[in-house]
Image (cartoon, rainbow, N blue to C red; front, top):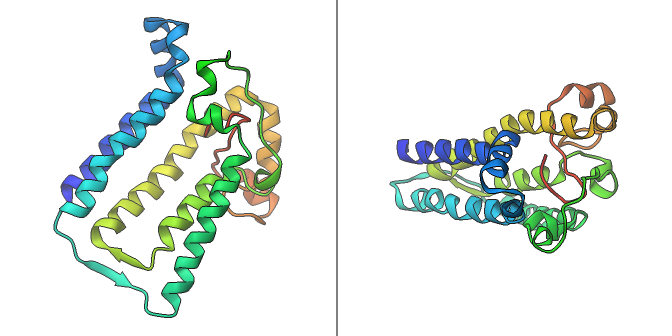
Length: 210
């Protein structure tokens, strides 16, 4: 279990550093504006490939069942996972998917971001996180190793959202502050007072998590 936690921690630190504004500024100074066209695509590719060792450890290390939800509740949870996956895809398609992946930047100049405040983003600031977390925690069969991964990813998402919030406020200023004050982060229907007090992360029109 130690190596699994260690691998997740390293991945989280590297992932956060490479996503930071400071790192991108240094990269731009060192390699030039031309290279930054490839940044988003390379970042996404690296994030996916670097997570592969964590998945390997989750299945390869000694493990045991933590819990298994019995029938018929397990089928309800599986249905919830499927619905969450569909909704995640729908929320993703409300963004500029080509820019999110990093393909549009290869052929066009990157334009200033614009907040998406319609669709799912009208009722929560980060639906991709919401549906992603639902997919994790609606799993009807959880082992010790998978539980460690789920908890670590949840903590990483919530902690990382704090730093993403600073980037959002820096980029969009009052526009995002007003959006935040009336729109909950993850759970639709929260009161405005709770929504304005919680840490958040959203997306710009390019679909970039912020």
